[in-house]
Length: 90
Image 1 (spheres, one colour):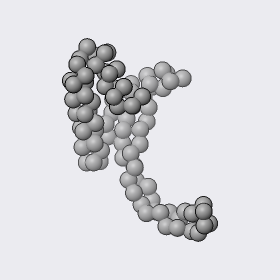
Image 2 (tube, helix red, strand yellow):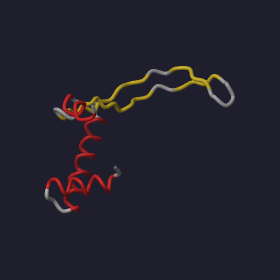
Image 3 (cartoon, helix red, strand yellow):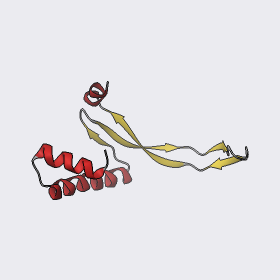
Image 4 (cartoon, helix red, strand yellow):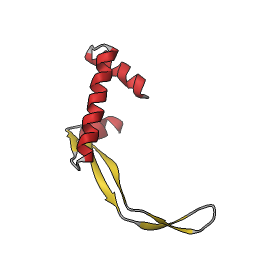
């Protein structure tokens, strides 16, 4: 499902216009990005939790040249599915 299909699904389920559904989805994405940028978690009970995790710097290997390379430390976004979502996917 891409963004356009998700907007259509939201509009149909919530009885909204596609324009309103797009605004709602964009607002959710923006608010989630803002919270994660600040280091906060976004928890949607039953659905899951978005959070930020730090990865340490490490050594890696270029598979083409077999040369050892340094991989910088960085922050990554993680998602942990909630119990209701996990049951649906089972």
